Length: 193
Image (cartoon, rainbow, N blue to C red; front, side, top):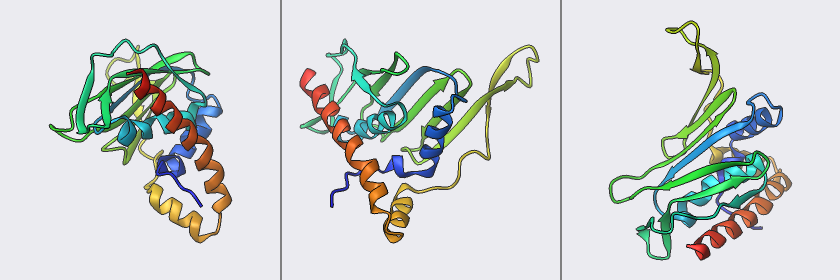
């Protein structure tokens, strides 16, 4: 048995977000930003993996940031600034590599027509905001946090529950396909830079 450590797609909140996205309730993707430290393989790959889980095919956009090459964690795993294209949406998601020497950071910020998904605190917390009436400026709409949307969840506990309940086939189907695609995309990125 093989399991690659991309556990976020086992998190019931990301599964819920994917279902809502597929129902078109979020609207089209407008923009996305990823902030990370500790290398493309070690950390950015987790964001790439969850984006592939949500959107399907992701491609490398021409990398115009070749000068942004940072060794903050491992000499064999640089932290880069790069863009990826979500094929289904024809939109760019920007990855912004930060220096781990100052602090650790991992955040996913996706802005849709009708909502915003923000994964923060090293990827352990998620906030979903939806478009609603602005409380201050009545003629405007703004984003309002949905406090009851996100459940307390731990991808590792969710994985453990799948293992206990002998639902290995669900793990294999979820894991292997995306893990291979993520690993290939990461290696292609590193070869370009």
